Image (tube, rainbow, N blue to C red):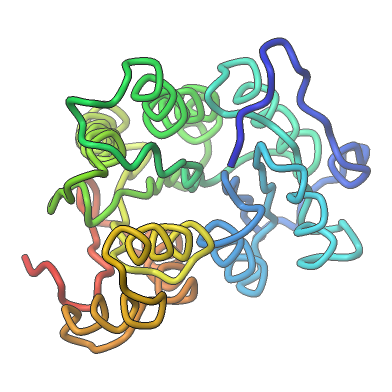
Length: 279
């Protein structure tokens, strides 16, 4: 996922420009960031199937195609090309959800980048800063933007942030990413206290989930080790007690649980890693 040049304006799709339409009285609205592909796309698909209205965002213009795939009518899902590492884009995201659906009930803060694959002490500051701007500040900007919407309704709002196995079990060569996800976990703990009792805030921490980002990581690992892609994939799976990679639906199940029930759960991390890390 690339970051747009400084000063570039977020582009709205035709669906996201739809005039205001009041949502069904019992239908809730969620914002899912980083949803052009991978976990975010899977979460959006699950919420749509469960009857939610959904606004998906991504810095990747492919998010517009994703929206067409998920809801060709544009009646219950809209898309916005936006860079959540920029606070004005996060504000626009919240405003667009209100315009399209009349309010916001939940935020799934998923947008993230993997970062450089170098030892942390050898990684230039500007590369670490870029990872933090997207992975940490992106979550912070989005939470600020939706807070007024989540805490004023009759039902408590919901925020789910995407953590990572690597925040709890760091991997050499992924220091910037691990640090950013650890910061997101800490942010979740703080927000769960500060936004209570009107909003629950939890994290879902995936392990080895076969997304495009993870495929790229496997290819890099294979090149460094001299193994083939399949050999590297099988080696990694051998470390998972449930003996398979995760898929987007595994993470979407966990997110849906925290958004649709779990009324007495806040400040918690739900690990979805096939048993690699137990708690």
